[in-house]
Length: 265
Image 1: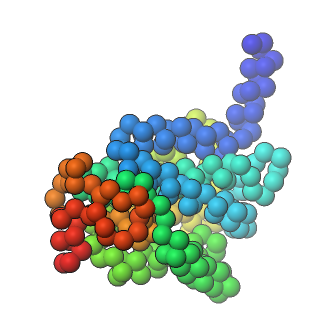
Image 2: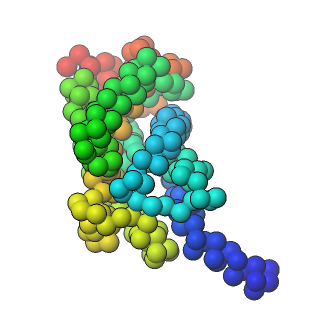
Image 3: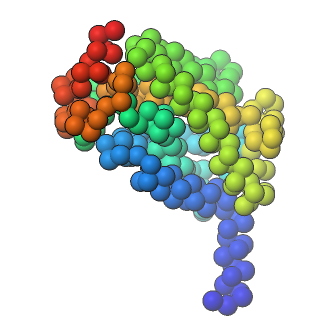
């Protein structure tokens, strides 16, 4: 490869940090999922990535007051946002799945319970756009909606409280570490975030908005997984033979005794 070609690729990497950071994140996340999680949990994380992927269409809303990402073709949204949404969806429950991998019961081939999924999607729109109409910034509306959703889902599924709290603690560590890596590789990347207070302020080089998002998302995302895929947290480690054999996330059929006991409590 000639020096000219190398210079061209180097310039492309510098110009589109949002694209290449998300591609790098996708490779790292999928590799970690493959190495660290059992098959049923891998399928669940991929499903969660697919569920979040369509939210890439909301990314232009953040341009108004939070960030200004450079995308291929100069489009307001693009493949970068799609990769980002899928990656974050797969990462969102990772810490909880790792730490409770021996206690989580997941269907052998998890599939979303459509009615629950549609209910979650519909319910989220009201506070998000309602807060926007009240003058909340885009990210403030998003973070508030996620915390509100977490409070409601915790009331519906208090058995997942421990999973949610452990998961949020993990994500608020993992996510800023990943951003720090990307800012080190692409020093100008952080300039894509606006410096408007409060979310644009930096803590250890990381925009406060990213930390607020990680906290709210890390709390609500495993709860959504629990409701939509009927994920259960057993009182004791579950052996592979005790894992449910159901092919979808619906119902309680096939749950091990420990998980059924937790539910009765």
